[in-house]
Image 1 (cartoon, rainbow, N blue to C red):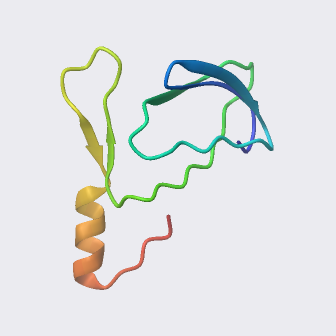
Image 2 (image 1 turned 45 degrees about the vertical axis):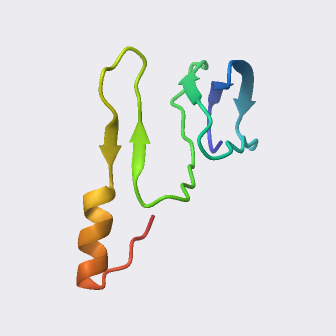
Length: 82
């Protein structure tokens, strides 16, 4: 956590994470977070997969991001700065 305060859920358990702390989420575990402070929340996330998939609460479909960018970057020889 870079700045702010977040309430984080991991498999039904809740914890408050503050600036300078971290939470490691094992692969394929349900997790979520929300800003529970008064300031803007700034997090630093490191993802092991080249594709980000999420199921938003109440949504019928999975949201997929970055997958096409990674494929294009690999084809062009570009390296991601993420």
